[in-house]
Image (cartoon, helix red, strand yellow):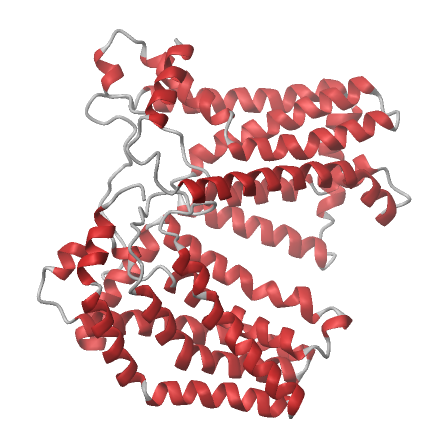
Length: 489
């Protein structure tokens, strides 16, 4: 029966009307996936020697075991955005004499072979091979590896249980940050507590039964849940429930822009892909720590300019580059109504402006590394507000690819075209070049002043730019509508 299911999936893939579309993009993604797997293999093989060098007095296996609790939590956190339950077109199968249990087993078994589970395999297998080369006990290493695979499957099936719960996501994120904070400030030795638990998988081979049991238990829970949900009139479709969130009545204060702002805020909060942009933007606030803490970058101010533009404009780039494709499912309906297109675009600009200001406020603590960091971030924020917002809205008029908001956000290239690559030149590269020229020819202060002045000039011509951008959207209106109607593009 499973062989029959696999044949159906194979035919469905190659007979899809969208199979021939974006072939180049699919090839690029395939090479990217192969590059990622090759990187994991090399990292896994070199991890033994890296840990030996950093912790010469500890066994690499013991060192790795201390960090396993963070790996589990990070996996769960990322899979919330990355992984979805693999579904198949089961409605035709429900009218045939095929057991629902067989369909359920196939769905869950297919998820066990997902790309995300392979990432762990391609990382830990090379590490285990190096352990065997260095005369670690064969039985212990092999059973440890089996235990790791069982843990990966357990994470895989736990993700299906918690995947629809935002509360679970917040709990996992809070637990992850909380444990790291307790360990970092010496309040509670997290690694010392969990290290022996995970090291037991290697030290005591019988302990492999624990992750195997948990994997089987989570599989059984998912099986019972899905088995009872497979019906002809509701085959694995997303659960629909009444929204209980705030009605966002405060957006009415923005006048004609209010309805559009309300629509954008609901769209962001109710869909995985847009919600992921918010979380990713907040996480990138800490991106500066990678560079500000390194002496080599302490006086390299063009790098500070890159950080300023990037951190204060991360939401501008991630969210703004797909305007108006976020609304592609109902864009044709909106364009058929008598709505003020300029107000629609102005609401997008307002939303992005708020994000830039918020991100700048979050980067203020970087003044700890010098007033230069704060000054450059301030000038970069002004530049983003006055220049990059009109630029990103203008390039949005070239977006013609549909976005399905219920698709997985990570590794999802849907809606991506050459526009998304070209837009990085004026948004990110140009301000850094301008800053670098004035920084090296005159001074840092003048470079920050120039960025700020350009942003202020952009503010002064805001209405002019929005009017021109609105005309551009009107010219591209029918082409965008036609593009957004094409699915799987």
